[in-house]
Amino acid sequence: MKNFNKITKTLTFALLATSIFGCKKSDNNVTTNPDPTIGYVKIASGYADGAATKVDVYAKDSAFTGYNKLYIALTDSVTNKYVENAEISLMPDMNMTTMSHSAPFENPASSQAQNMLFPCSATFIMSSMGGTWSLGVSVKNLANSKSGKAMLSLKVKDPAAARMFSFVSPLDSAKYFVGLVPGEKTIVGANDLELVVYRKVSMMSYPADSSLTISFEPTMPSMGHGSPNNVNPVHTANGHYKGKVNYTMTGTWKLAFVLSKGATVVDSTHYIDFTF
Image 1: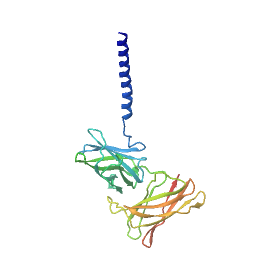
Image 2: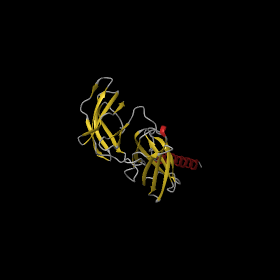
Image 3: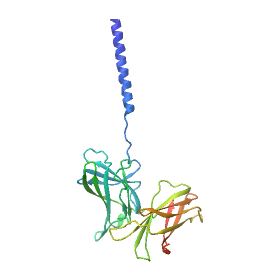
Image 4: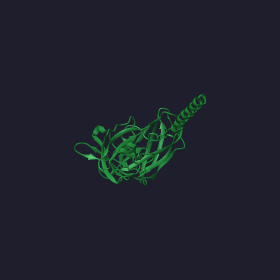
């Protein structure tokens, strides 16, 4: 009997140990996908009727006058899982009671999400103080072949320092909008400088423009100096102009721009203040 009890206790301990360590091994194998929206601010949300898809729009900060990098998250209305294959098109709209107009925008470049988000942009040309902004988001959910459109309301503020300016060209009387593309991180030294240029064709059409030549000069008014080794922005694609700016110290810098078309200077009166 003593041997039987001893064997029983041994087996019980073995089973208990197996259960404990088995659970630990199983726990170690559990993986959870990180939330792709961590670090972003949700600025608009709604449903694309007909596509069975929820639409959430994120940004690094609340929407502001100028070029906004946006990130769209789509989730299935039934399963609540991320939709990672979809065709998306945008249409910003400003309702000013007696009239309305759109704004420059960039649709997602791919129907495949990047880390479950669809990068895109909108360049809001005025704040919500002048009316009501909405963002139309048309969605074709490639997982279920359903299509729909969400109309999302959002607030657009004027930033403390302007991130965009506009001018009318003396050559063709067309109105141009020039926006500063926010960088990921600013350092003392050489930094990427990226601008976008759009030309107003109508109240609802603002295509990207590649016709300008841009030069600039950075200065620090409070210290009375500029900086060397800057590279003027040149057009790369879709109205984006890329160059380099050298910040030799932290503080407020004034970026003064000269924009030309051919041999004619079309604007030299605008600048953007940048503080870091």
